[in-house]
Image (tube, rainbow, N blue to C red; front, side, top):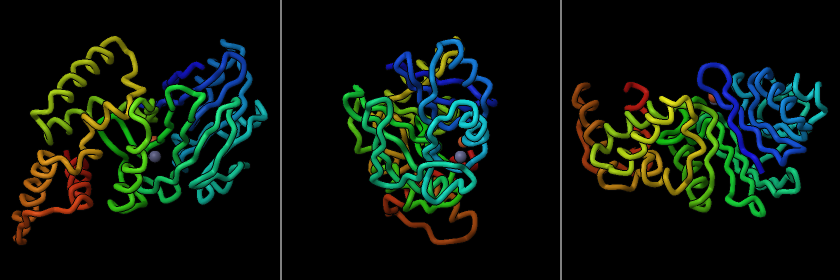
Amino acid sequence: MVLVPIPAFTDNYIWVWHDNTSAVVVDPGETAGVVAYLNRHQLKLDAILVTHHHGDHTGGVAALQAATGATVYAPSTECPDLNAVRVTQGSHIPLLGTPCQVLHVPGHTAGHVAYVLTPPATPPVLFCGDTLFSAGCGRLFEGTPQQMLASLQALAQLPPDTLVCCTHEYTLGNIRFALAVEPGNVALQNRQAQCLALRAAQEPTLPSTLALEWQINPFLRVMEPAVRAAATTWRNSQLTQTGQLTSNELSDVEVLAALREWKNQF
Ligand code: ZN
Ligand code: FE
């Protein structure tokens, strides 16, 4: 099987997964790059997966569906205008003969779903939309820190060799923030060097793996003492500025909330 990120807009990736005959495409916000790729490799588009309703993920869906007759899969509570098979937590859909499992991962949007290709696809492949990024996570537009933490923890439980296919090239910016949180994290320093080289060569930094994200992603590391300490220090500096009392013990959710707010201002 072939897994390819097609660049779109300024920093999106539209993932194409294919067996040299049939293809699946994820979050096609626009059509041009996808159509060119399908034509060049003489692929028939079987399915279109949609993770959430934002335009940079859905803008090309209807046109691609009309042109190819592909089956569209979309979250049960989003994108009502799409002519789609509706999926939610626990849905199983067959893709090119491979089982695909759907997870409901609210936080970035309320109905956001992720798609996981499981064996015989080895290693497993995760299409996580705007929920999990390499060294980061999506903004909380429609969900709470509690929901995002639960969503990220559900994704983090997938096998360590899972390929993490994010929909944006945000890695270097995320790493800069992650290093502010954990300046002494050697795996993070190594990942930064690797990604700087990849981007200098105009290569994608993705897919990542879950094993790597466990080591470098502060939003998956809210239980790490260094991450908790940095989040607590940042939170207390915010509280002091507004004349409020500081606290020394943040819960996991409060650590994630602090990291997300800190990143928004970073
Ligand atoms: Zn989005
Ligand atoms: Fe997006």
